[in-house]
Length: 349
Ligand code: NCD
Ligand code: ZN
Image (tube, rainbow, N blue to C red; front, side, top):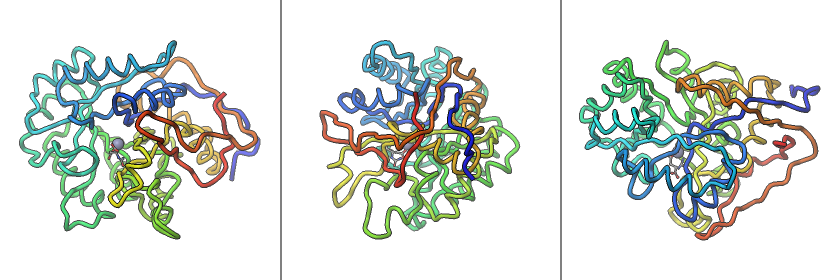
């Protein structure tokens, strides 16, 4: 049941614990959409070429700061792309200098620009041991890449084949299982005693695989991990609205131009930055759990990362349907904004 009597909600300023900003013209076009509502974001390193070293992360952070609208207080939290050649001492230095907040693990070939990711987990063990020692989190794209594993089973298989052994070998490593899409992942995180959390995206709280495939193929709902069946979506909503400290927002807002999405082999990624807070308020309201939105979007993430919550607040107000653009323009072409498929009534004032 919606919280009928709540029409205004003030929460600590939210953060986005998984965000793609890209570079150059795309960066300049999409960054203001996140900086408008969010205090901080964990910035994904899957550029071409990827952000592997502390020097590359520092340079990328500089380009983000240069692209910020005047007067914005937004803080990008940088990540390093883990490769089998990553130097543990470069990671240690990047963390100590405040250049990198986390390291990102892509199994090689799992998703957009992940070719330099990890094949052999033993090769990255020295890096993971340093990270455990200094308390630096590992953000994990949790899908196996083996072609014989069905794409809808790749997350659940990853838990058994990769995550469980990894956590046994380096138990003190803090791990964020990113953009979880299954009941299996929710259960695995809930059953863990420490050092494991999960991010949940905006769109996985709203769409299931029917939205992608039933009644015609909808490229704008295609992302990785791909949305699963409805029972999994319901499990994600339950986790998000529960207030459980191990679940927090990582939008995985991942802009691609329409021409890149709408082709025979279209890119994976959904652009949710402009309307994420309105979408989330709608989901939490429908579940009768608006009062847990702050935990999910603003409190649980910083607590896991050992950072303070943002000091300032945002206010959401419920009213007539919100209008937002269907696309944003970039110098590379239009980027379609996520369509939740229902009216949004909550606006950030
Ligand atoms: C992301 C992208 O486009 O960079 N795509 C996506 O579908 N989420 C990569 C990723 O996070 O997997
Ligand atoms: Zn992503």
